[in-house]
Each structure stands twice: as structure tokens, then as C-alpha cells.
Image 1 (tube, rainbow, N blue to C red):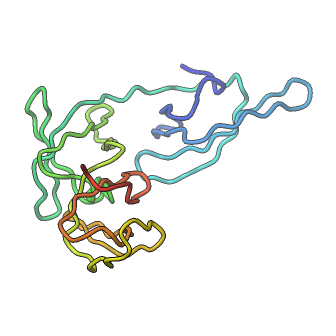
Image 2: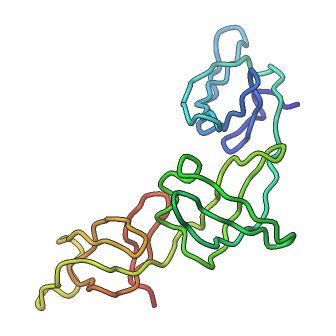
Image 3: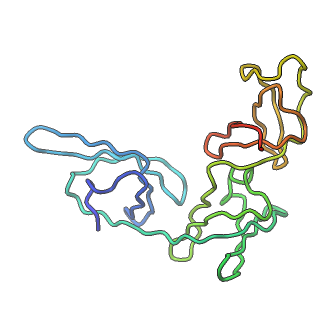
Length: 187
């Protein structure tokens, strides 16, 4: 049990039988010592966002998610297969579970998978991944270092993003997994 005051961003709570991820936390001191905590919560089952207000001393059920390293094996016919690095147990996730994370899953890479009571919750991706540009317009010779002019590029995982003009087809680039943005050329 945690109080609402202790439920900082990143905490997972069980409210009304649902798992809720605290994504935003605001502390409000009111009149006559009435302190409230406003939280933005993301439902980990259906991804709906809600705002709730709690008294600072309200008791809430906190949840600890199991987290294990999995290797991404393959994707075929709408199924993504992963293997636990310790137990060699394999799990298969469907497109509803993976969403846009599929753009950052490359065969052989490892990711963390969070579970609660043996039910899949979330794939934790690394902050940046290395992808290969498989389709883009050719660069302009004189424009070798200008980041202001961009063009569309398609990566080996199907992600379409804006890249600087100096990036060429078959270049390896680093992409941020939370913003879907080009970071730099891979070294």
C-alpha cells in the first residue's frame, strides 16, 4: 500500500480492478491543510488516459510488475515471437499488443517485457535503436551538413520518418523510440 502522496510518476497502481500507470503527478495545497494529488493515469489494459484527484493520505494498492529479458525471434502473419533469455520459454504477441513498437523490433535484439500475474503488460524498448534506411530520395551534393532541410525515409522495419538530406539509402541511423525521430548516423 502506498499513499497518494508517494505515488510518483512511473508507479503502477491497481484501481477498481484495473492496472493504472501514473504518468503525471501534481501536488496542490489547498485551504485549511487540505492537500490533494492530481494524477494522470494510463490504463495498462486498454491504454485509456484518465485524470483523478486523491486526498494526499488516500491508501492505494501499488503493483510490482515482473520484468524479464526477452530476445526478439521473428514476426510472421501478425505474430511477434520472443524467447526468455533465462528460461528459454517462448511467448507470442499479436498486433494489438505490439502496436507501433514493431518499428523498433529487430531480430536478435533483446528487450524487457513486463508482466503481471503472467499476463503481458508492456514491451520496454531501449531509448535508441539502429535502423537501416531502405528507401529515400538521393541527397543533394552541396547540402552535406544542413539539418534544416529534411526528406522522407523508410527503414528496414517499415518506419517512415524525416531525415536530413545527407542521409542516403542503406545508411544506418539511430532513431529515438519515444519520439520516432532521427538522432544521428550510426557509427
